[in-house]
Each structure stands twice: as structure tokens, then as C-alpha cells.
Length: 194
Ligand code: SF4
Image 1: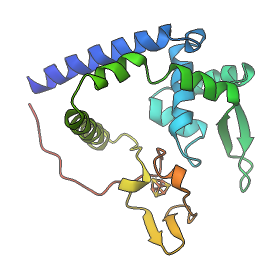
Image 2: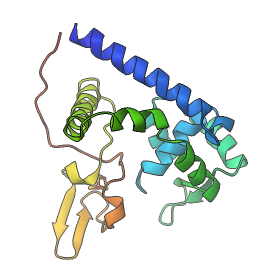
Image 3: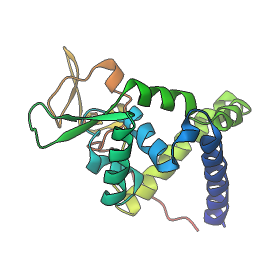
Image 4: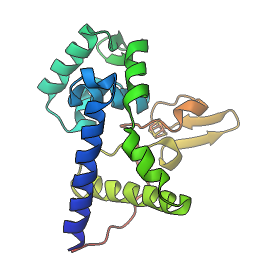
């Protein structure tokens, strides 16, 4: 019963938010999948802005992602930048135009208003619970886990500031809350639910 109820709520919320995003200007000029890719690129870190990570995060096929990226590049919403160390790796960077469309369209106003109607402690609890649900789905069905540095076991603290244990690079303050494909959470047991 719990599973059916949670599915019903999430499905309805997802439908309403997608409908809002479709109607919002200037995002209305873009298809939902195009907006989703731009949104992902606006929240991911520098080691996750590559086509393979977009494919993993959105659960789409490589072909769809590659085609959509080409359209977004042709329309001037993003640009492809070769990695400075390995020229075979291509990073996808939002242009000013791409950043503007995300800022003006997402998150949909309906989500902001719905959250504002809840008491602050319930908003915080909901955020933690949704994060736990997402982690449970990713873990039990072996999806790539995306998360931020503050909850990652690769985060190292040094006198010079935070460091990433995967890339051995320093992390700037504004990188700590960006989502990352190399994220690895501390293991937590998962209970079975009806
Ligand atoms: S510390 Fe973890 S989340 Fe942060 S950049 Fe490194 S691997 Fe990614």
C-alpha cells in the first residue's frame, strides 16, 4: 500500500511539474528532454558535464542524448569544450543563453509555491526523505548514484581546504553542492517495504 500511495503522489507531482515547465517562458520553446539536459548541466560539477553522465542521470539512450545535445548546441544553448588533459573527453558547458533559460524556467513556480505552503520543518523533513528514497532506488536497482561532496566518502579535508579524493583537486566553495557522478555515499542498510 505504501508503495502504491508514494507512486501515485510522485507520479501526479511529476506530471504537474512537467506541465508547468512546458508552459513556462522562455523554456516553452524547448522540448522537455532539452530542458532536462540544460537543467542537469546547470547543477552538475566539472567531472560530470560529459555526455555519458547526462545519459546516466536522465536514464535516456545514448542516441537520444547525443541528438538532443547537437540540437542544443546548434541553437546556442550549450557548447562543447575539449578537456584540457584528455582532448577525447568533451565537456558540455551552458552558454549565457542556456543559463538564462534554466534560471527563468526551473524549478517550476508550482513547486516553489507548493513548498512555501508547508511549514519549514516539514520542508526540511521532506527534502531528507526524498533524498533517502532516491538513494534507496539507486542502490537497490544499481543505478549510478549522483550526490554532492558534503555527503561523499571521497571528500578530504586539508589545511588548504576541501579536496576531492577521486581527482585529487581542490574543491571551491561553489563546487561542494554540485551533483557528481563519482559521488559515493557512506553505506546505509535498506529495509524492505510493502
Ligand atoms: S568529493 Fe565526491 S562528490 Fe565531491 S567531487 Fe569528489 S567524488 Fe565528486
